[in-house]
Length: 279
Length: 322
Image 1: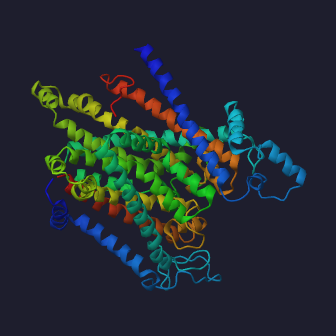
Image 2: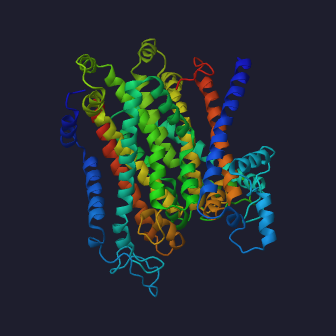
Image 3: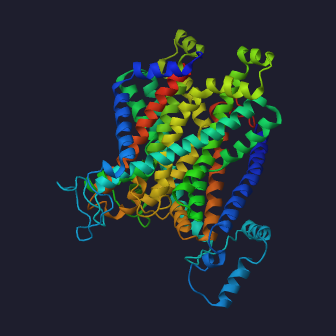
């Protein structure tokens, strides 16, 4: 691993990108614009109801048609980018922040600290995660942010394993031994010497966490357990529009496609970053 | 060998008990700490008389401390009594056993598709590494991993079921014969299989590529072993070990996918039983169904550990390569 892995990473991602990766990056950019712009970039209001119009197939006025309450499906899909990106960002960032601290401690100190942390990780990993998420979010009725918190807890376990094994690789390197001999304080070795060197690995896996969280959060909303009723959210749209599949299929197929395109693009970019980091 | 197998199985099954206890305690605590009174949830939100309420409190031991409540529930559960559903008044054990066959069929059907198509695809991609076919398999598997079962289910339901009219869009064909049932379950099984298949394709491809570089393959070629034999009984067999290692990931993904698929296709399986129970806070059903799901995952995991030895006799029981 080079001394400044971050630099190498950036060079690689701009240098050798296949056309498919450029398409993926463009898709992510579009979703990002929708997230930041929200209703401002939507073709119309996502919440105006037209009960007399009801669910209609795509038309010149509403490019993706309307849902049962006569709301503009395209506008709702654009605005839905927000819950699709914000939650997974919090999950990936939250899980890896906790996992980084735990992984650094477990990997560097070893001994009983390692045992305690890793047994906790083993217990969480043994649980059937998606099932627990459904039960916890459903029973507490907590909605979106409860779902986000549950996913953080579930994701911390595998992430801690990743960070720990990356730290173990660094710990046996000569530069750490040199730092120890110089009597550099332990917290400095951990956060100034080791952390920057495991950061590329952490970031590349965080991208994959993000995509996985997106799919999971959409799933909970699809079951009617995630976001609040009425929220413009891709998973929630699948739940609310499930009865109009045969009258306005676009109301389901568009948000469904958005979930796949967004998660798939991010996964593709994540895989590429991971390959670059592994070299 | 047989003796060690029995011993190993007994040990493994014994080790699952603490895990089941942890899961049941977790669910129990959760359900009882959740907002809202347990008694009113158990009455199904209906206004009932004071006597009926008292009877309910006595039946579910709601006046005992929580630890006692759990112990009493556990005592009943061990004898197969999981209480009765608040919504349907059906005993939970009956409801679970009624709906389990459909879910088992669905996951079995999907697993056949996953292994039957996923392993050959991964193998074919690895053998023609770098070709256009390989690249499309890799790209498709990245998107497959990102496609939750409810999304692929929706597309299959609309395009193959509704637009093309090839498959039924509703019902389980429960009253029909085997073929009619299989026909009804094809789209759900396919939706469930796609996401999981992507994982299997990725792992198989990576494993075959790794094995291809090994010396034994070069030696086998040098000895003039037929290519067919090298691929099928040398490469594939060794490449299957990582697939089996990932079995627990695959099993959990399949099980979670089955819940979503059952909702998408409105199939009355265990998944829809659980989701309905969660939506209505049907406490006894939530507890029973969660436990059954967890048991299912654990049993399948133990079975796949046995598969290890069938595929790779060098691995000894209890020392499975992890």
